[in-house]
Image (tube, rainbow, N blue to C red; front, side, top):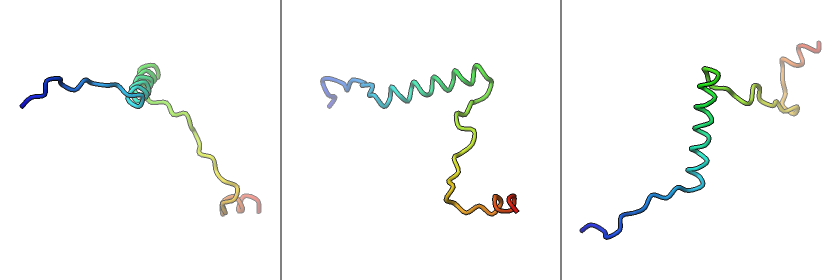
Length: 58
């Protein structure tokens, strides 16, 4: 038995944000020919022991 009223498609805030991000990404690719990344290098914590850094100092 079919329901009298079919479910209406609701666009949530999450769907809206995802669609906007996807559109912005497609626009960047169209402008630059490749995806652009916002973060070039990751932040490195000073607390982590780094053998290469100590080799440069010596």
